[in-house]
Structure formats: structure tokens, C-alpha cells
Length: 265
Image (cartoon, rainbow, N blue to C red; front, side):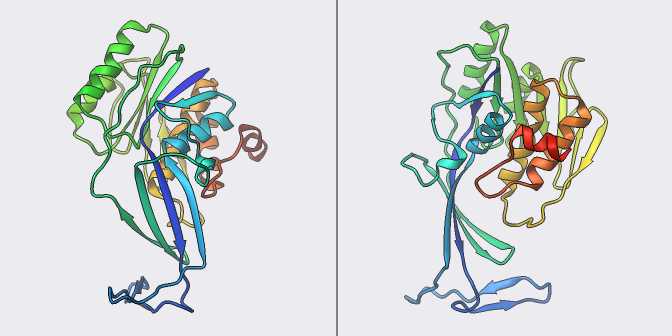
């Protein structure tokens, strides 16, 4: 099975700080604050980690499940962050213990859909995608002429009207809100911060270091695991279990193989 992932590739740069060289204070809710003044002072970090996120995470999971995958318009993978590559979307993440603070761009790069040359079995519109009217037209045009291509779409926080046409075409929909299937063949997967629902079954999930794996990465791992399991015709119960174990055991730059996940089950 060949999966085309459509979304934005992000580069997350983690800088790990410690209290030996930085002035931290705690508020009444036990949250750390950094005394940061723009006066030319130095704030040392003891470790730097770079990893590709966004669509690269989805690609990592798809490949680890034994499927063929590619990112539309990119050859980057989750593990390639320290290699030569290109990403216009950077996030700088300051870390202290299990607490993080993001520095992100105020501009989101629009996602461009590139019509594939090869036959595609599935198109996955990733959580990282930043879609517009032209994007929707391009995807819809391909779906109208490709009878064997199926569509999965992650519906996040963009205007719902942009997603309406894609939802109508989709075989699988991932959502963080509330959606009902539009037809009997459509499956809707609901992903919340600590629970996943599919076909009236529910699975709770928890991260041991919740603040270190970004929200985007965690939800992308879950969605990609569910989609890959469904493509492989796993049961609903097993698909949910695979997604739970994959996100709970993921590191910043690695997810688990299907073989290892099945051993854990």
C-alpha cells in the first residue's frame, strides 16, 4: 500500500536548560519561570536536539508499520533532522525538566498539494497541513478521477467550511471535536488529549513526560498509527491499542515498529 502524506514538515529545535546556569523561580502553581532580560546576558543550555516534526512524524509511523509512504513535495523523514534538508517551518522549544516553552513563527506556510506521478492507494491530509481553497480544489480534482485512491483527513482548527468538501470525500476522518460519519463506509476517529475513540470503542493514553512530546507530534503519531492499522485491516480494538502504545513509547525522534508494538500487546 502506497500512502501520500500531505502536510508541512516542521523542524523542532529543543534547547535544554538547567538551574545551575539560569535563574528559575516557581509560582504558586509550581510552574517554573525564567528570569530573562534582553540586556546582552547569556543563558547557557546543556543539550540541543533537532528533529523533524509535522508530516515527517506521520511518514515515520507509516513506514514503521511496513507501508510505503512519501511526503508530497518532500523527501524528509523524522530521523533526518540533523541531515541536509529544507524546512521553512521552525519551532524553538526551551526545556526545563518536564516543562517547555515554544517560540514559533507568526506566519504559517500554506500547504501545496502536488499531484503524484505514481499510483497512490491512500492520501493522508496531515494535522500539520495549512489548507486553502486551491488546496481543496486540487485534492478534489484528483479524487474525482482516481477511483482506487482513498482519502484520510485530519480536521483541526481551520475554518470548517474549508474541510467540508474533503470530509465528504474522506474514507477516514480524524478530529479533535465532534463529527459523525456521513456515510456507512466512513470511519471517524476522535483524538483527545488523553483518549482515542473509534467505532464506539475508546482507549485512554497517557504520556510519562507529557510536556516534552509536542501536542502536534503526539496526535500525529496516534492518527498515523490508526490509519496504518486500518489499512492493514486490524480490528478496531487492536488499532486503538497500537496507537496508544506507539505514542506512549515514542521518543523525540523515534516511533516503534509494528512488530515491537505487537509484542507489547
